[in-house]
Length: 264
Length: 336
Image (tube, rainbow over the protein chains, first blue to last red):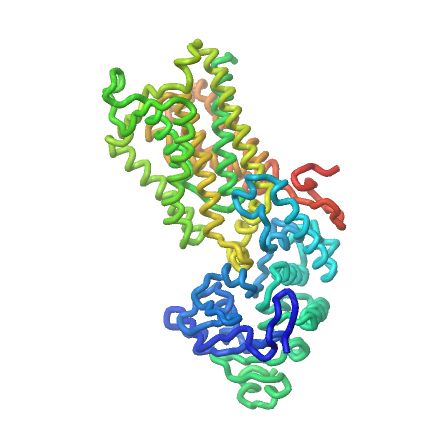
């Protein structure tokens, strides 16, 4: 069986991403200590754990924002361990950040357009050749961006500076910006962090529709009711290691996981 | 005000506008704090000089030592000056922009500027050391055979053509998707990287373009002054250009032009007039000039950080939302 979408045709039974024995050290401190993980297509894989568990560091290593100290990462059959972040993003492995990372002095629409790939005006030469050379690409991308804005209920904010948005709206901009790249695998680092509770369910609803579309997502999140609603499987990390994985209801039955994270 | 003074002022204004447009591309648009900007102008000036001068063995020129001396016809020395600025940007960019964080980049570039000035000051065989090069031929002066006054008008015209060309290039860059990506990089380099853009390539490309334009401004300057020495391109000269871009409005070409007219031209000329008052010791007025420039920068950063003409909001045709405040623009054109 295969999963079809903008990411092409992906066999459901084969992992889209495989991380093997990933280590990341910071001057003797083992932030990620031998983590292995497989990400299956068409699902939202949750990554949970207490503060300092190494979740965000692991996400940064997957995306290439931080290099791994050792270990290997395979994405759609290709070893990407040594690739820089921008080349991983071009292959479809796109991340968002734990802290808001909008381009504050650009409008919401511009934030989305920055992410659009293959614009002829995005090189120095293309820019110097003038508007006629790139306007067709630009018009197409503006249409794509506007359809995303409509889908996420943000059309009215198109011309606002991204820096002037609320926490939840900034999160949506980041997700839409990542979607402009037509990702094959989306890495979301705490998408509900700093978001007003009334918006959390709204964002969760959008993520649900993306899952229904067949998009593969890995999500770090602390809001456990959201993880329970969206994610299967869930991977639990503590002190840089994976201490369990499976469905949320199953994880709740494991005493060492309950003790490490789920209590309270 | 006599015409000689006015002509001088116009030529310097043109050169400062070109330099500020280049610095705006690097600093205002892309966020590269290029504290070594002046060395690219200097490189352009030296190379344009030695490309247009006769060999240092020639009569009247034997009192100085310099490399080159090819006596190339105009506009080759100016093109050479621009190329020199671009070529210098390659090694400087490779060393500074690839691995260092933005704040360290600024420090490294400042140090580069000081090192370059010290080296040229002491290495006499290159460009005649501290004394610098003199008697640089002015573009087409022999062919035109005009008097000094008419030639000045010709030079104003030449400078204006260069301003127009640089404005055209800067406008195309700023209003393109490439310019938008540069602005995004200025806002958040890590996020740009995560969206599939190579920040090193982006920074290198705009650093080289800025270097070329700075080199051209140096070539125009030396063609007018006919002399060029290390004392004319000390690192504080860069600070004046930064002040101009900050005061005018970072990220906005119009702001860079306004800043060039307000700070290096207007502000310096006004404070220069104070010299005629004969107050205090002889160095008091030049020192106060620097104090005023420093206060000017601080004042703007504190009270109007976006400058006199802030960066424009870009609204696309067919936008669903009303624009709440500030200037409205439709892809480079002012909307109602």
